[in-house]
Length: 301
Image (cartoon, rainbow, N blue to C red; front, top):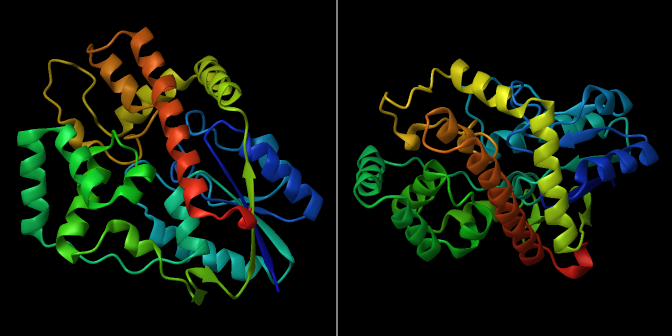
């Protein structure tokens, strides 16, 4: 039976390096399960594999979308599935690596089809957000779906609103749409072996690595990359022009980019924006660690 080797872990922990080691050992390619590395215009801030790394080992599902294109876990699962079926004709093993938890779940355990949300539900949630703010969204998601709260970007209004919309429209938690195997036994696939490789480091070391990685990204041109991305998306950088942060496209509504928008618009200093990137990265890493440990039994890793 073919085997999918799934390399998981917190942001900045060293998943890419470990995945390349395994891929070279098994002489197989890598599929990326990172919801931001799909964008071709964001190689620095998403820590996408470098051209040198991609020359060492073929990578799939990296840098194939533009900033204004949408993409979700269901689409990823379908694309990755098609690639896997082809690769397993040539390789006994394939490596999957990434920190996007819903992407990994979608491929390894399957996803139920997320229902369409009626316009009236969507508009009602948006109006409540406008009236009550981000803290209301956060409280609602915590109450409606505690499991998804551990995984979601808790500062991303669009993702929080989508969770609330789906919960209200379906009467189920958002997380329930990630529990259907294909085919499955208790949510686990039976058409391939899945081996999870969890990359871990002591928390103090991980946080230090995250801080140093942000500094390195800045040296490589992250600030300029972020400015260019906002300009490509026609997002006003002039603080005098009104802008609703809830309308940020998903591609840039993420750690490493949205903080710089506050700086470009004159709302934060550069020093504060950089510190917030480091802080939000550490918080995201903590949520990832909690998620992986809750999702996978010790014997699975």
